[in-house]
Image (cartoon, rainbow, N blue to C red; front, side, top):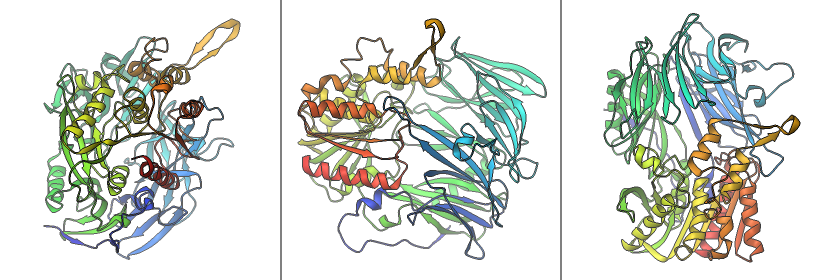
Length: 633
């Protein structure tokens, strides 16, 4: 049994925690353990200027403190070896036109525990500096048999990159159709995925020396994900349905043999893979559904995880990586009603010490009660959902319905800073997993295609009505709040079911479907009147989920065309650095509401991206939303 050590601080009164306690970026995050177990590293946001800490565990002291460059956001930490830390940040570069999206640039830099300057990976070419120099560089394998070498992919191929100099050597070149690679533990590229957008076909190739062998061809309508490789290097792992109701894990032998089923769950989708931090091989797969879990393929890793789960009973445990000898690990422990805490676990001494807390200001605070529920849609379909209720709530009260973004995404039964902030203010929060959500099977997901304002919206509406019938919600005090697609659902709720909502809040949401498609599916004029179209998987995704720009139904499903029916006050917030939804979607909706004399509150989040990655703007959003809800809900 693991003995727990360390504790957090508690609030000294019964007042709800301030917006800063929920909206500030996690105080300590991305906690990672060096392969030999000597050092920890983490991102630290205790101060106004965030930084990265490299910490000597035995000496209990910080060895290095690295400033995170201004205007960048920490995206990840990885150890290349026992003394070299890889730091990945991103930078938002705002578009100059409201009808276009901003860009997010990523940069990885290597730093030594012993000191010295960082090295950009790969090194910048010419005069290019900063995150923009490495827009397409991504780490594929952090360790190889060669010391001080990582494997990275860029837009043109796979490279060996020296972490001491940043110099890169091309080991496999791709082509204009290449979308992804798989490398083995030795750093060799063994498979490549190409997408032929002209023929709408995916190809998977096995690579050996100079030979290339096609081992799979699929129409891109049959979704698949090239997840990685088995520990024995014999086969790739694909995530695909292959005609089954749910997405499963399949092996694809490199010798060209047919795919074989590796694992499936009859009630949930397999949506991701857990890889060994040292070999890059897949040792487990993520299983979605109302409950989420990892199905372990490796017996040793499974036993280690089960030990942790028993020690932290009642909470979810995520392995954040372990030492090379497997005697120590960092475990992230959380539940929907308790924020994440990182524990340094020593299996030899049976101890678990707190290594970091994401939200220490919430330690000891009783947060909202969470439960999984289902309700019936109007056609009888069972809709899974999560319900969080305020502490001590009894009887009907104010409800916030919070549809997720995507829409091919989902909510998870884990701590959510926005949900718990709303619950702390006395609101019950309903998170409906409407049709179109992932994790519940292909038919459930595909039922949402081209159903913006249709079935997906009806499922949200039916969830609200179920909460009213079950005496959870007071029918006069319901607000719909959402971000991204959820922002569209919020505006659509106010426009298409105006009698249901006392207010609506759209955060970086969508108001005009035709305009959105015209903005994200651009065409540019060529010579002699020739028009050139830019193709990408993102474009196909937008049109598959929403419809073609010429679809006559887009207009009536766009909230901006139903301003007259809106009765409830509207809250609109948007980030000026949004790289997914053009800010014109929020600006034009706000202008139309004002012109019609409708009550609207507009909040501009300066420099914020689509994912609300900045603490100061998250806090700003919570303060403004809190005031709006107090006034209208």
